[in-house]
Length: 266
Picture 1 (cartoon, rainbow, N blue to C red):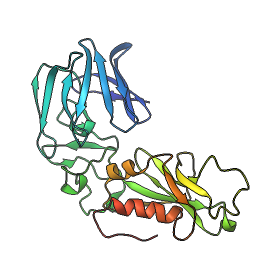
Picture 2: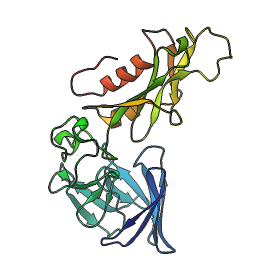
Picture 3: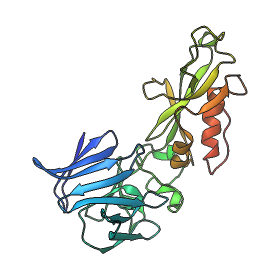
Picture 4: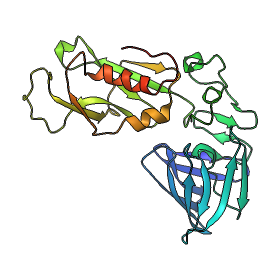
C-alpha cells in the first residue's frame, strides 16, 4: 500500500500494513524505515545522511534523532496539542507528534483524516460520527492530548459472532483496535476432545484478525493505547468458566479497564 504526498516533500510513502517502511520519489528510494510491532513504532530511519534512531516519549512523539555514536543530531519539543519546534541539524524525517507524519503543510496525517495542531482539531469530521463519544466530531482525543493518542482517527470496538460451543446460542466476542484484533481463545496446546464443550479448558489471549464478526460495537471514551498494551497475544487467562471467566467478560473487562467514562457490562 502507498500514499502520495503532494506538499513540500513530493513523493510516496510505502506501507507494511499500517506503518510506513519506505519513502520514494518516483523510482528513487529516499529513506527506509525499521519499524517495531506496534503501530507508529519507529526504530530507525536511513536516508542519504545516514542511520538515525528515533527516540520517542510516552505518547510516541519523536523527541530526538540520534546517530550511530549516540549523539542527538535533531531534537523536537511539542506544545500540548502538537505544535512542533525543531532544533539541531536539519532532517527530512516527518515522524513527529505521536509518531505521525508531518506533511510539511502544518497538517499531521492520522490515516482516516488530517489533524491541524494549531487549531487543536481534525480538519474533517470523524468517520463514525457521534459514535466516537463526543458531540464535537472534529475534536482530538476528547481534548486530552497529554494522555491519549488516536493513531488512525477511529476507535476501539467489541466485535461478536455466534460461538462454536454451547450449541451456538451464545456470542463469541473480542476486541478490535486500529492495531490489533484479539480476545479470549483456547490454548493452542490443548489436545482435541480433552475438555467437554470447552468448559474448564485453558484459555489465553489469541489473535482474532482473521475472525469475521456479525456485529462490531464502538466503545466510547476508551484509551486505545491502553487497550493495545493489555492485548498481549499468548498471555494466559486461566480456565474457561462461564459466566465468570469467558470471552465477553474478558472483552468488556479489558475495555472498562481503559475507559475514562462510565463502566459498561456485557
